[in-house]
Amino acid sequence: MNRKCIFLDIDGTLTPAGSNHPPVSAMTAIRAAQAKGHMVFLCTGRNPDMLAPVLAYGFDGAVACAGGRVFAGDRVLYDHPMPAEDRDTALKLLKENGVFRTIEAVDATYGDEDLGDFLAQAGEGNSELVRWRKALAEQLNIHPMAEYDGRPIYKVVFMCNHAEQLEPARAALEKDYHFVVQDVAAHHCLNGEIIHRAFDKGKGVRIVADAFGFDLADTLGFGDSMNDLEMIETVGTSVCMDNGSPALKQISTLVCPAVEDDGLAWAFEKLGLV
Image (cartoon, rainbow, N blue to C red):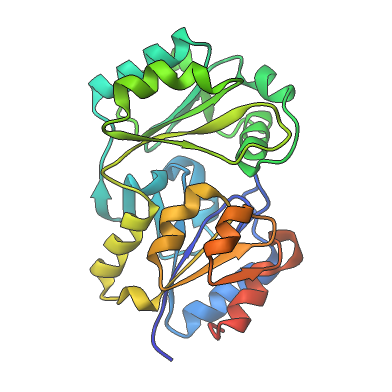
């Protein structure tokens, strides 16, 4: 079997949303795959600070910040923070329109102080909302926005009640930025990310593959939500979790059981990775 390069989303794929602890079955499968010579990378919207507890389980590197920073061990393969002018425009226009903001640097995350109250009113049905709610509840290094010191950031996460609240920022920035809105279920709010068009998870996959000499045909990607779309479209074999987006399932090579049902272990075995 050819050596493969495997990319794993974290929240809702490798771990239950908001958790830093993969199921034992998943880590057993991942280590078995690595023992056979395959490489396994995290591929996530999380910044390096927030993914560090998961990276410590022994992954080969990560496509972090939704592709804005890519690294393998101590080797940085790609780095593209948001220009300061764009950052300031986004933060100003979102705040003026009542949008709750979270910003991510390499080593820190900052959020509006009343975001927790906003999330407490939201229902279930979106893995990103659940992750942020748990992250806030567990004090996962999310600092108050008032403490932000101007360090480079890679993306802006937004939450609001109505799409119209995003329009001023969209009008100013959409030429250079994707406004990635997650699937809206019964939680009565929109959440998503503002991400530079220069990068995405799919481009991160290509960067890693090029750096380590993998053909794209020998790459595999596992995800659960529409922020995994570019990764799923890029890899040679794509897998969506059963707890994932219906739209993502439709375009994936394989749908595997949910993360809580040992889905990764099932898929690794089915695909001959272990």
